[in-house]
Image (cartoon, rainbow over all chains, first blue to last red; front, side, top):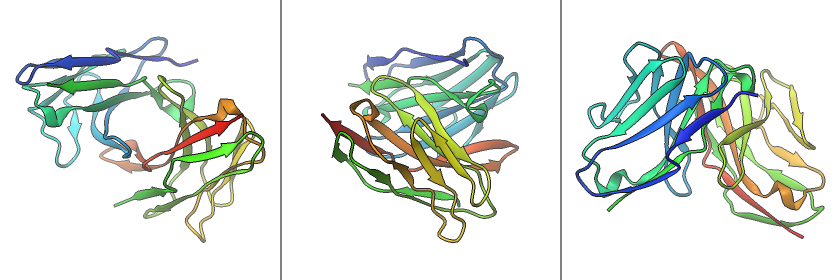
Length: 116
Length: 114
C-alpha cells in the first residue's frame, strides 16, 4: 500500500536554530503534500499545501517565512522551521495525495518538535 | 468556514462494550466525511468514509452513516477490542484553493480495558 515516511519522529533544538522535517512518499508519486500542526488535545490544523515544483499555499495566519516548505520532487517535501522558538514546539504531520488508497491521502507518522 | 466537532475524550470502555463517538459538522454544500484512526506512534489511517447523504461507511466492525438532516457522522462499533485503543479523528473534505483539503475534529482518545 501507499507509504509516507516522515523524519525525524522527534527532535529537540535550541531557540534560534532551524529544523528541517522531511516527508517522503515511498511507493507513489505525491502530486500534492499537506503539512499539519497539532497542539496537545487539539485538532490537526492545516498549515500549507504544496505541489511539486511550485510555491506552497499557506493557510491564513501561517508565517511563510518561518515555515519554509519545499516540494522539489514528486516524492519529497520538506518543512523547515526557521529561527525556532518555544512556541513552535508542536507535533507536525505531513500527508500526501496521489497514492492509490485512502481516498488519495496518506499520512506520515508525525514529528514531535521541542524547542528549548 | 467548515468545521468538525467531535465528542470530547478520553473515552474508556471495557472489552466487548458498545462504542459511539459523536461527530457533527458544519459545511457549505455536501462534503465527503471520514473517520481516521491513529495508533500509538503511527500516522493517521483511513478507517472509513462516506461521500453522500445516507451513505454508510464500514470497516473492521466500525460503521458511520452520513446524516445530512442532523449534520452528523457518528462512529459506532458493536463490540470493541483492546486493539481498538487509539485516537479517532472525524474529518470532512472541502475543495479550496484548487485542492481537496481535510478539516479535522479535535480527536477522541479511546482506551479499551481487558
